[in-house]
Every structure is written in C-alpha cells, then in structure tokens.
Image (cartoon, rainbow, N blue to C red):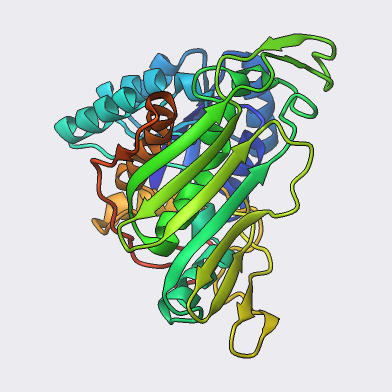
Length: 365
C-alpha cells in the first residue's frame, strides 16, 4: 500500500477524503497540510488522518510518504509539484497539470530526470459512463466518427463558489477549469489531438460575487472567459468545443459525437455516471444503452488509486503525465491559437491506455 500526503484542503477535498476512507484501500492518506490549519484539523478529526504538518516542506520531508496529492489552486500547482518532486516524491495533482505549457514541460522533465511519476486529474474518464461509451465506440456502434460538438456554458462561479476569485486569474477561466474534463474524455474516446484552432474573448472585465462569504466583492478578470475551439484528432474527426463562463444558458450540453451509423450523446464528463444515448441512424430513433462498468457515482480518488497501483506494480498508469501533459498542451495550444490567429500544431502524442476492467471488485485497481 502506497502512502499519500495531501497539500490543500479546499472545496474538492471532501470527496477525496470520503473515498480514501470508504472505497480505495490501495492507498492510505497519512498526512495533510493547509495554509489554514483549521481546515487540516477538521479533516483530521473527521477522517482520522494521522499527521498534520504546518508547511508543505515539512510534509515532503516525511519519509513515510510515497505520493504527494496536490489539491492547491491551479496557479500554485507548479510550485507545489516541483517542490514535491525535488523532495523525491511522486506527485498526483488536481487539474490542470500546470498553469502554462512551459511549467508543464519543466515538471515532466524534472520527474523523468529523478525517475519519478507525475500525473493527475481528472479521473472521471475512468467512470462507468465514459468507459461504456468508449467500449461502444470501439465496437462500432455509430460507425466511423466524423465529428462532434462539446458545450460547457454557464454564468460563472461567483454565483455559488465560496472563493471564486481564482477562476478568473492565471490558470483559471472556463478552458483551464472545465476543459480538462472534456478534453480528457475526448482523447480517451478518440485518441490524441493533432492540431488546435481557437477564438476567445473576455466579455466582462469585472465579476460581482453573489455567494457567501464574499457577497458584494468585485473580481478583476484577467483571463479569457469565452472560447470557441476546433480540435483536429489524429484519427480523423474534427470536434468543435464551446467553453464559456459568459452564458446564461445553453440548450446543448456535454459531448455529442457524429458517426456514419448514428450519433452518440456522452454524459457530463465532469461526472462518473449518467445516461448515455445514441441516435440509431438505421432505425431513426433515440436509444439509451446500459452502463457496463463500475464507478457511476462521484469516485474522485479513483485516478490516484490507479496511479499508485500502477507505480507499485509496474503497469502503465492511466492518469500519468502522458495524458495530463497532452491535455495541458491542447488547452495552451488553444490559448496560443486565439492570440495568434493561427492553428497550433501539437508536439506531444497520446496513446490511450487500457480500458477499465469491469470484473475487478469495487475499490480495487
């Protein structure tokens, strides 16, 4: 069993803690730290975490810890992950891998030089819905995939998140925040991306927070908040993708794939389950198909457990940097394309790892 030390106890940390304790027994959480010590103390009391550290460097110095779980804000991912690698720890980071491509390149280079692994979220592609959709696509349910459309649109995080400011700073915005779910799902369905073309805009220069505890405060927006993107895949399809924090409502959601035999409707890639459907072109009717894999509820920590088992056993890791770096380059490529007005040609390659094994007991990887 590999032992984990966690840096950061923010909004997403609760589900990690729950799943550490109740589901995934191939990893053990032994230490935690947060800049706000009270958060770490609350987590320790609720979930029985053995150790609390005041600083991440103290945590990194613990010889018992094999993997550092980086749950800090996106613009902090590079600093925390780099320090953990320098301390000789494997790193599993929340998305994105880093706030820009140059940081991602440096992290990957450092990990390879030190013989360590770095990888991370999202792990929703390992859930029942996307794994089932992958199986059906591979079996030819909708024939050859011609193209598709992805939509993630909403009115922003300031309406509900307790600390929404970082969503509008470096490393934030709809592309860096939500893009990893959609792009990770797509490359696990279709394979690697070859080139990217994008347009972007920042519709509102300021945002009014309407959620507690910062009601009435103003956020200065420093990143684009609306993207239209074309992803050209090595396997042939071109997928258009809308990522926006500027829309009141969209009537098409999530991922639609268009094939020579019909269309597939992939559930929300920010979740593990859902109800996948396809339009049968021959029968001219919409049909629902059953989930054929495990993990159809919020199973965050699944990717970390797979990461740990892969390192320990020597098998390929589904959530390694080979995936998270490719996703980061797609997003940074879209940003570079929007700035230059020219397509961005990818430098990294991506090959899908093995699908999940539906015969394994729940919680075992």
